[in-house]
Image 1 (cartoon, rainbow, N blue to C red):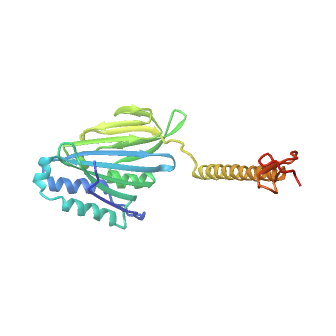
Image 2 (image 1 turned 90 degrees about the horizontal axis):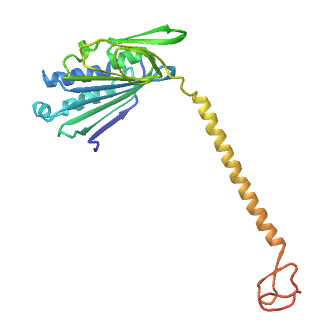
Length: 259
């Protein structure tokens, strides 16, 4: 599927966050009246409380007919990217046609810190509480989406993190849980992934680059030595110019004696 429109604009991180996804859903809900829409929210939380959100909002052909023109939705999305007080960074959006003839809006943004995630993705309606689960440090997540997504026909939230200890959602994998429906409490106790230290990655890249450069230099040195060895053990016939080995007394090409 092709992208019909795409915008990318880094957004500065301020102390007064704007709930990006909630504002977008509210705009769609307003335009769709009671029709709803299909909203799927994918939230990834990694070590250092780094997070990324992908919000997919699907509009059916019937909903598009009621809207008539998606220019206002596009304008709302652009407005979010231009907001200097947004809680997220690396905000971008695009839209693509869906298989049923409708359109899917894709909004992506990222940031750092659980509070900024709460503001950007959950309109400050979720809670992230630090706790101990057994002997492990953990975070308890709780969210009731009814007030934010209650007017949406379909709502799905998928949380990706390090390890899920306990949840009332559907556990898809060790670190992935999914909830479907806006009228339920969503809870999960999880541990963030350890991740990889960016400085360690940079050091590893530098080490690999250094080894590659050393190998390249060694190969060039060997090639030069090989050429020098050939030149040192070879001579050329004064008569025809053919190469003569050092031990040879006569030219192998014309038979002329070595001078």
